Length: 181
Image (cartoon, rainbow, N blue to C red; front, side, top):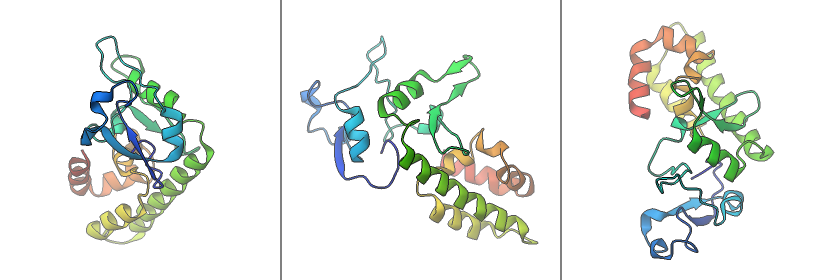
């Protein structure tokens, strides 16, 4: 759930059971996670001054509101929030706690997924008419890491070939972005 690296084998308690034993058997508090995320998170659970979790809860919120993706390295970083002039605090805590910016194997998987998705779009753009339904299916099949939301979001949408796709198929783009949100 945290890194979307498709090898989840452990159950993590979002609110750690050692600190919050009353949530140990609450179904919505149990998340599938990979061994690395579980090990890095452990009982670490930063809270805001108001007592709210400072980790992204991937079962309840869109991670791309707090995280960003670097297509050159495959790393995840905290999303910069222009309205505050700083990175997302929840994104920063999530990246730091789970070491999302320092995991080479995970970054390589994200990078491969991005390149596959990019190739799907580039191939579709070579056609005289873009088969939008086929492209949507191809992108979903290629998306092993939940990157489609990022690619259709404010940062990914500015990068080629996604920007060209947005220009050539604005109606489909709007429908896709609405369905991902």
